[in-house]
Image 1 (cartoon, one colour):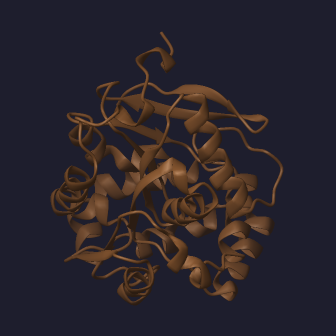
Image 2 (cartoon, rainbow, N blue to C red):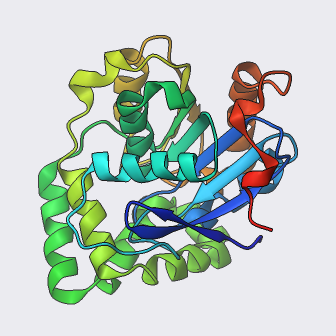
Length: 280
């Protein structure tokens, strides 16, 4: 994988991978809770052939800073906006998976002029608070390690866990490196999420993608998004659970490209992308 750079955002540093043609439309990739930008590995190389790909680590995750929590979705969307500014981008096509999708919806509501389109992947606009109360209590008393196995069981189907143990082990290692404070801060943001009443105010082209076997943010949650966001469509990826982008990378990436190729063209103003904004 490529090296990341760090940018000052809201009082801490955000780690960010910035690859692909500098003059191309910018696609920002936002990862799930308990992960980092590396979970987008199958998509980054393909997307970077025709788009400027900005894949970043959310606060409290990966190589980004860990400000004191709890956090809110407004905080996390504000970080994404600060990174867009730091990279001197006018606007981005935003693709978010799970927590990343929640950040994308919040950003589209908070700063609609900075989002060209949305890819909302294996995500939801509201989740049961009780589920998060249990996870938060465990992390506070025992750290994140006891949460790893149950997380892997939600993120991948049994068939994939049996067939691809190396990929599962890799993602488990990424999750195990998450700082407890970062896990807790973002968990509080997800627990407090109440986006359903605001979905009809999202006014950018939107595609919802979900794994058919996702138990964490199931097809029913994706249908709420697709039916509530004006003009949104829905793509269901067969034989995939929560991290559908890793379990079925070809189908998932194709669903992204078909949408992006329709809504992002290299003949437009490059979404404000400036080659000079990248570190040497």
